Length: 287
Image (cartoon, one colour):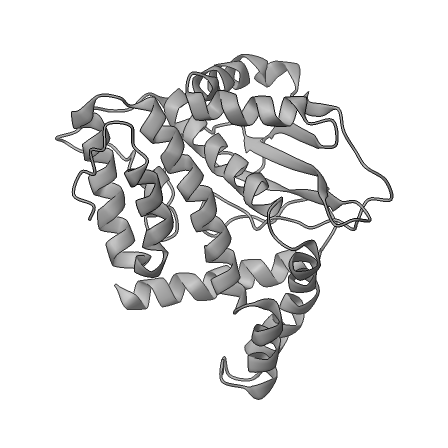
């Protein structure tokens, strides 16, 4: 189990390395080794504030499926709350598009900050088959909880897509809260870290790597997984609101807990916070 995580971590490192050598280029996104998510691209600070709320840039041939995914997301309180926040924010522009690349996944990036360090723009790109495919439980314990089993009820594809949208909104929300200087420093130094790591026999104890990790707040994989787990926490809020039936909610929360216990124990508090905020206080096996 640990070896599989390490192996996936090395693949992630390769993806992170590929991405961060193309900082600011949002014309092409890296393919995800998890078959779900690419690392968020980072753009340079914007010379002036950007606004106009949410810009939906969806080709006509994908409109019908996109509107179904959007309606499912907006059927929940958290979906409406977050959508309204970005719609009514005069100093922020969130662009949402649908593309054939990373068909069953999504990518959030195109971040821009103003001169004061406030995030003023981001782009979410949804795959054309967002309502299909389940990412692995190691880094995506919430979305993976929707995998159908013999004893569970199959969840509609639109709900799967909406859960993935919630994950992406979680990225935008979290990025707006972090220090823009640190975020962009990570974008600058991670390629250096990866280049050294891949050329020194993969020795993470190399003093040069230790120094870089100290500056950016962790190794590239640690930074990547921290971002993904924030996205997953927001996806969990969506599922909490989406399923009010105690049996269904507990089934999903129990699956999430099993994956978190196995692969993300140190990140448990952010998921536990969601559970404890559940309206009926049903913790479903959580402490």
